[in-house]
Length: 361
Ligand code: IPM
Ligand code: MG
Image (cartoon, rainbow, N blue to C red; front, side):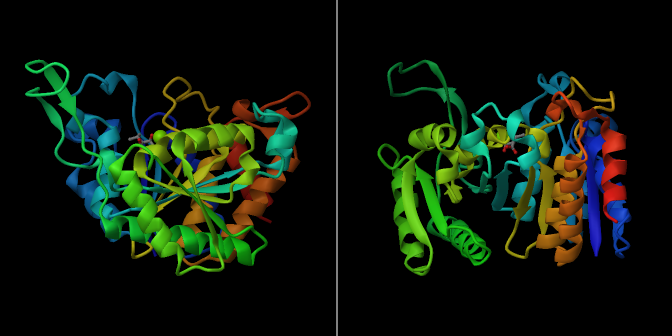
């Protein structure tokens, strides 16, 4: 087993160090190799995703990724910006299936901005298609308009598009995930989020998801427009089980879902290809405002390492051990500043990582 470690920028290096510490405490045998990515790689090699980093990621069984980005790179040409590293990894590794669970820990229910009864027990899974849609659709660019409201004016455009196989494979992922959740007490329902009332691309999405759904009679399927889904997520989030949607809508809805749980600092994510190779990263960004201060919450990254063990490295026991340990440190009352509340114990990044290691037993 080989794990590529790509800490990236900002708090990325601090939180990934804690996750690696937890992995090493498990007595499993695996090889790790680190490489620069994002702004750090740009500084060293002039590119956010150098060939050597991409090669390492491709060869590894799994990638543990921190975060990339810093305001200071906002002025660079788009292909050189740190965000291009994560987009390039998704594209080059074919990581089309993005799992973003939103789970509200009982210990943190009061950290949510929503009322306790709305989020207590929340456990939903957003499955976002990650290599298509308007993110990658060609053509795109700037030009002089020849039609539209202002012919002759400068304009910019992107292309929203999905092919049948792209929709089919993400739909299968969602139905299988819902089936698995049903087997362990879940509801077994997929909500496909679209904008079929306006967009051709998402009428097609809805049609194809419906067809695929016929192969899963044991899983319920419903459809929701994205604007309504945004509303329902903050109104009655527990009504969802598995949500499947396109790249752009998934980007937006998953941030909203993350916040329901009280802290984006708690949420892991997995991005998988058809070989179960995966990239695992916290759902949050590089947080340059708190970088280097030792206060970032490492739990999302530690939980991402658990997802990695389960999905790509076939070590479900070890994954469960990490998840239990995280639960335990929360029960002990340890909190990084992002999840701190009165009556709990404030700790920093390293102390939180140490506590998880200790709780592994
Ligand atoms: C995410 C992020 C990325 C995205 C950015 C950093 C390119 O927001 O993973 O949700 O838009 O997909
Ligand atoms: Mg996002």
